[in-house]
Image (cartoon, rainbow, N blue to C red):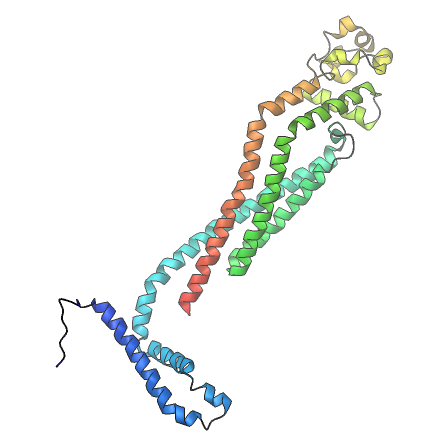
Length: 325
């Protein structure tokens, strides 16, 4: 009679014994069925012979064992399902909320791009020497974000892992574009400032009160309450001043501003704004460059949160589908 030395070989835990017994039982059944059908399989066709392979027999026994011990299998998998399903619902809610905010951001960018293109067209002539592509890029980016946001909502509702992964890739693409645009704007801000100074000074020198650049100069001076490039004396060296004086768009009060006073350098000093438009615009940008950069990079890095959320939801859905098999 065999005896086990419990001191040298301590007994395994009860659950390990159960698992080992189940494995041995399955192996024993596979071996018995395989030997029983081996002789019969020699006289069968290829299709019938494939049914007697150990892999097929093992799969049949596994399905049968699941049917016999279905209660225990469901009892073992139920806690994981109970943990996974609420996580999926929570992540779907967060991703839907994020996709909606992402869609709203795209609508804002699209609206700003269209407004810039149709309402601020003359002002772009004072920023660059030629036509600017900035409003078109802003409009295109906004339209793409709107479409991506709608696709994100659709992918979240459908719950398809490949759709969620594609949504994460699209968010990564938007993140890279926004990051490049933000870094480029921050690095080349001094070049933009110099270009604005040169183009605005040329617009003041060639001012005639009728062309597009002249209209843009009048709008800037009237709305920002400024006059000239550096100050109101910038108009003294222009051809327009020798004929008509300082433009009326520089006046503090239009009712107390006439042509004769604007031609007089002494009287004009008390009737027009003294601060230059270039200094006003540059000081506004420099004082708020931190806020502008923070908002830009904040919007860009919010895509990272969306990417992580989409990837996690895809992983959880795949795991849940595996548990349901």
